[in-house]
Length: 293
Image 1 (tube, helix red, strand yellow):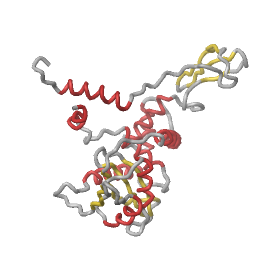
Image 2 (cartoon, one colour; image 1 turned 180 degrees about the horizontal axis):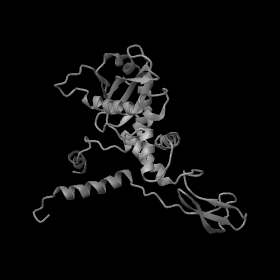
Image 3 (cartoon, helix red, strand yellow; image 1 turned 30 degrees about the vertical axis):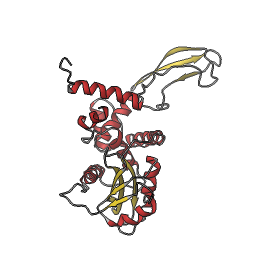
Image 4 (spheres, helix red, strand yellow; image 1 turned 60 degrees about the vertical axis):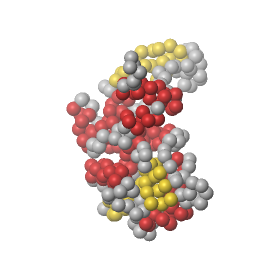
């Protein structure tokens, strides 16, 4: 700073401060007991711990209704403690199968069946999805789409995915029975619903998307929508970003040895992991600092 030149560390701090102002980073507040869960009275006292082999949970007694209760937000009536459940989900999201997650938990003294882990992921994926439905992502006006064949009970299905070109945010998905004759307008309709807008440009490598594009995304108002389907490997209009995400989905499918049913939560939970947990090389410091300047 003595020379009037900012280094990368100063840029990083400035970017962090601007990011906090823009998105409004929220802290998760600690659990505060403000009333009885039965009669809403504030006349409460702590009354020991509920002990089991998976951990201790604080018990409370209401002096008015004389009832006991515990507070364990989103983990009520769960046999295992939150740390064990979240650890299992983290291992699973990183690409392990349900049985491998079960084996990993046994190494730290947690005897959990793969079916129990399946139930955990099913339950909390649904809770996460309901929360994320209330959030509108900030994405660009250029989207990509592609199809990928999957095995569902040994039958071939096709996964149509919609991704933001700039941030690689997985916007929407649809599983169809066929490739060339499938009606894929629902995935575009879902994309508009999630993003709250339509793209100015759609990049694909298949002209079969043309009909669905005209029906759901095209407009002749300025800026006019444009569908780029003449993909070339040596130019900017390639679909490499989409192919890379297809490879990630393929790896996840191989681990699970195919899908058991079309509405299986495996695709949904991987979409959540891809959007909110996995690191993306496209979000470089250079690109981020450009916004701060």
